[in-house]
Amino acid sequence: MTESNRQKKIAGVLQKDLSTLLQNMLREAGQMGIIISVSKVNVTVDLSIAKVYVSIFPSDKAEGIVSEINTLTPRIKHQMAQLTKDQLRKMPDLNFYNDDSLDYIEKIEKAVKGEDNPIENPDLLERRKKK
Image 1 (tube, rainbow, N blue to C red):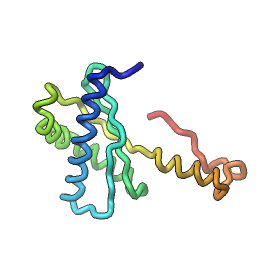
Image 2 (cartoon, helix red, strand yellow; image 1 turned 180 degrees about the vertical axis):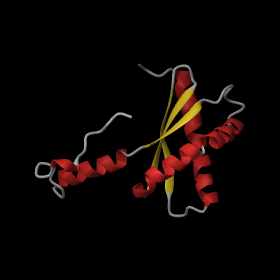
Image 3 (cartoon, rainbow, N blue to C red; image 1 turned 90 degrees about the vertical axis):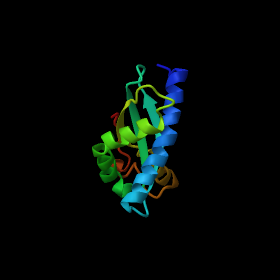
Image 4 (cartoon, rainbow, N blue to C red; image 1 turned 60 degrees about the vertical axis):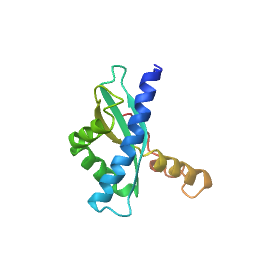
């Protein structure tokens, strides 16, 4: 199903504001050397739930940071509601997910270059699972 213009606009506003908010939260927590970006936001048709995909570098710390963000979701939602109060009537519920597509692309590039041969070792390229 295609997204409506309203969904796209809300997703864009959320993506922009969430990226600055999450970067500021990392800076305040003293987490230096970690880069976080919001790669995609999907909003449901009824505008009640937003799926937020975050890309974190270095990727070995990604799962821990995403779980920490999920525990801080009520605080993040409140701060986002304050930022977007002139643009949104109701703030959608936020669900955060790790975006590991860059790691997946890197594995494919290594396989194409011949560094890791998936024919000899088929466990190198795992099947992507829908979340």
